[in-house]
Length: 440
Image 1 (cartoon, one colour):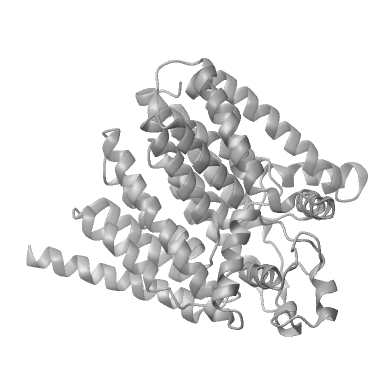
Image 2 (cartoon, rainbow, N blue to C red):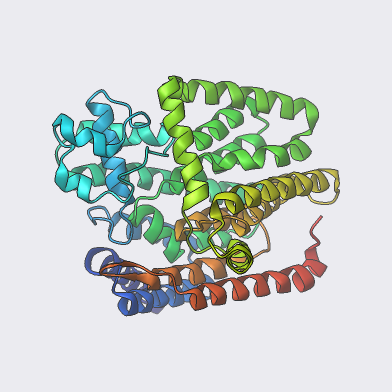
């Protein structure tokens, strides 16, 4: 027993040390060290999940690892500078959806200066982050108005709260539906989740928490509270909207009508700050640019783009982006209808499997798939027998190889390897593993 405890503490120390090395020491362009360190974390992750028996120790350990990153300045993403910019803009009484960063500089607002402006990765665009996320930005600016590190710590404390809440909810849901408790470690100890959410301050942490809370409340038949939590998830990022059609088949017409109504009312209240015409125009412009200009680590879109280059001789993203979005919407509606008509699975299994494949459809046809996006797939896969999401959390980190000291150039060989391996393993799970459980 003493040797087992010593081994567990040694593994926890190693995991924490490597995670801290990645977040405190490495730079984004140091690809070899970065991939090697992440690979080491993933090997430890695999060993712990397979060999360690003290689940409570490792759930506690997963929180300790996250806390150890409390004062790390995010080094793999610069999105947090825009979070701080938006928060300081709110604190100055201005609306980030209505004014471009470049137009703010001439106003000589305290904290919104050239050094911070130079760090923004979207200087020419209105913000794209919905109201709940903006509230956290504002709060961080109010608590720490002049310190970037202070604002980072405030936001990270909120993310730590959300992450801890997600782990607790996963444990509760696994217990309620008599699923293996070890599955909680798949999310709690996943290196990508730790590095991207707690480490790099990505707000998928809140989306995951509010969606899990919504599912938990739904399992208790608390429809109204579940709908409010779902609306809060939408208020962090708009993505959960794509789950709404699927919920009809899970809840039935009567409960779904109540759920939709309360979600809609809650969203209207949350989005009141966007009610101004100028604000709505800025927000809409940001969304359009997001889908018509940016591309990163895509799968099917890159194939369509190459066809466009061959057919017309230029990048067709301005038309391809929204067309793939339309195809994605049709496929999600069709999948939701077919799943709603099916029989066999019920409860959290059917709901999680549905959410999982709705997200997969959406990301497969997206023009942008950042590493932190797939953390939400992993969160719901712990309630299913599908494990392609675990593989994806390992493969998608390879996208960081494209960064250099001077910029970013995507390595399409690595991207192709990522998706061939991913869809290959997904095919294996659907064709062979499904014979045991059946996708209804």
